[in-house]
Length: 304
Image (tube, rainbow, N blue to C red):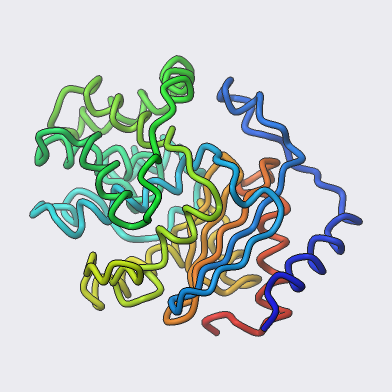
């Protein structure tokens, strides 16, 4: 299948669609991003690679990084993770205080902001240098070892992260945060500031399409069972309160971020990353969602 021709065909079709989204301007550093950039990269478990557009340009992956922190905790840290969070779709915005209050400080899943903050709390408890551990872990997943945090983005988020501080304080009041709040939130903001390209994201997520094994190194990151469960979580919880729409229209497990990136995996076949900075009202890339819907329709390659 000629994926590059399919990418070009879909992109041409999307040119006639008005991009009604907006960049995540509530984070000042993200407000400066050129909204017209667009990139796609697909990597197969057999080593085939296909690129289009701005596939090599790094951007702030934001909530996509929550998959890395979760898998690090899930694979390497003996913790009470499922006592401290649930694994259900939220049905509310990713930074909802109402849902968290109703559930007595237990996040609905590890991919909403509150869930990722609890994962950061676990990593702070269990690892001597969690920031270094997260970067080292990402470097194990991809051959690109220059991936880093962006301190300007992290500081920008810290200065405007009032709702995230409200979430962590609410969970602290329910005794679901065990460490110093500032230490936990510094890790959380650094996590969200990681910059990667579509190429790097697609390659880093390939282990989730390959039964937990990194294809280029042969390293087993997760057992097949835990890989299946991680994909199931991405399928049901990876797109904030638009996970049902993504499942219905695209039919792949995946994760989005307010930097405009989306990563999706087809188990035993490929992973694909799309980047388009303008977001819809749910916080997902407007054209990225449309692109992946057309991609699985034209290729007939979804999990359903």
